[in-house]
Image 1: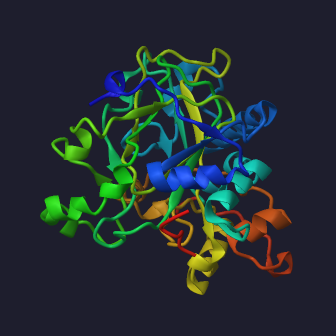
Image 2: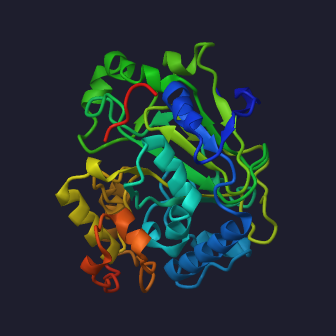
Length: 356
């Protein structure tokens, strides 16, 4: 199963306040919101991305100069995913999270405006015609939830798209309805699931699984326009795909794809201890995984820890994004009076109902 066999049909699009989006997510496992971020803001956000990447590459990466892209900050092994060096606390990510219609879409899905945001990172792909190691792998369908620890609904993930998607650029694939079969993974692969660490929420679906092979489970390719938001149930099988030619979709920035990950949940799902840890994460420029209500910093990832132990120079920006009252509430503060401005980081180191 790959991008060439994915359905060419495009999904229904929703406005942020449309209650039908929530029903669609409950039934199909995903929802697409149209134009939640204006194109001008997407362009501004890309500028913030380059500010972050220059800071974390010691000014070695030059925007648009592909020959300097080998100085790119560390990515997660699947290709393109940036989850380290303070990206989750950058203006690049915060500027997208706090767009009114991004928040509005999650408020519609959860039926509450009292939300916490993830400190997730981004996926920015370089044109792999210049270097095949930059190419994401094909058909790595997975779920971002531990089948043993959280067998029921737990989280809604999302991403905002900043550049046009085409067959050439690559896109996101997901399997509609696959979230309804999430609990079968524990039954079919008891040894694999049992060996997952309690705090591991990535499960790659074996290639022989019926979800990837039966006709009633057909992958859908989601081609997004600039400013669109894709949301999905964490139990939904999904992945990204590399595209057909690997050429830059944007001749100015010389990038293949650019998305910002966003996940929001009701504040009531997080404990006081988690909220306190989230406050500290902002001050220390810590990026986390997608679940706002379970504190899981990416600094704990094995590949990152290996770099730390080797004494690799790991550069962070001088300071995280500036805070507003709205941002403070999305962190977990009940009032901005409780907030203390962070110091620069030491560079060394309600559940959704089952029916609508």
